[in-house]
Each structure stands twice: as structure tokens, then as C-alpha cells.
Length: 222
Image (cartoon, rainbow, N blue to C red; front, side, top):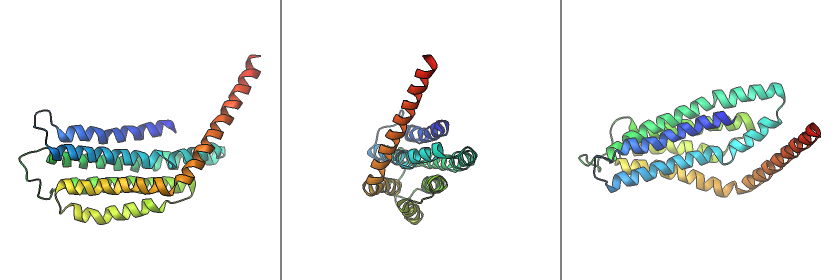
């Protein structure tokens, strides 16, 4: 499972790359809209990382370890192959949108007060929505639960994108960042009890595994 998570980390890295490629400030003067946009893009990346790795991923890993052999194979296929693909696709779409938005913000000749035309803003919003929707499917398949804050975030993105395409690019990007950071903040508060229980369960599982490994080594090398 670690390999699939590493692939997802690479896709998240594409978001960071889009900050540098889109800003392209090497041959341009550094402007505050470009700096602000880059900061918002990094915040969006961090929020999406948190959304995946904070709670659902370690809980799903525990379910995977406890599953029987036959059901474990089906679980790995559905959750870590079929549902990871749309998550990665969502991150790639987000990276494409952010790159174009940041390129616009780093161009001093354009009117930053005018809305950004083209597909860049819908791509950024749609990519985040696809990622969260696929992650909901991942959570439902592995844990049998759905987090309502994710449903609310997806619905909010679908509503706000209509506003984002009609306002200046920096404001539209800021609205996307606000939704992502708000999702993390709300879940950090509401799910702190579940987070603590999961950390304790993960620690017990790791200690039990290490104890079994130590006992096996003692028997093997005595």
C-alpha cells in the first residue's frame, strides 16, 4: 500500500511544481499577486495532503491488515487501484489549473482586476472536487463510512466555482484555498477524538507486530 501512497505523493508534488512553473519569476519582477498566489497554491497542496494522510489513510491501512486473504485482494484492487486513479487524475487537473492561474498572476502586463478566462479556474476547482469525491469513495470502500464535511466541501466547490470564474483570478484562487483550509480546520476540531483513538490503535498494532517479530527472531536464532 505504501507504493500507492508514494504515487499519490508524486501527484501532490506536481502541485508544488505547478507553483514554480506557473509563477516563472526568474525573468520577471516579483509581484505581490504572484507571491500571494503561490502561497495559496502551497496551502491548497498542504490541505489536500492532510485530507488524505491525516485520518482515513492510516485507518484504511488497519482495515487492510485485518482483512481476510480473499477480501484483502478485492479491497486492494478497489481502493488502491480503481479509486486511487481518479484521485491522481484530480490532482493532475488541479496542477494544470493552478499553473495557468499562477502564470496569469505573474504576468505584469495583464489586468489582474479582470476575471481569468479559459478553463484554468474550473480545472483547479474541478480537480480538487474529483480528488475529494474519489477519496470519499476510498473511505466508503475501506471503512464503510462517509465524512459529511467532505460532502459539504464538494458541494461548496460546485457552488463557488461559478463565482470564481467571474471575479479576479487571485480572489478566485483565494476562495479555493479558503474551502480547502476550512475543510482541514473543521475536521481537525470535529474529529480530534477519532484521531486520538486511531493514533493509539496504530501504536498498539505496531507494538504487537514488533513483539511478534522479536519473538520470531529469538526462536529462529537460538
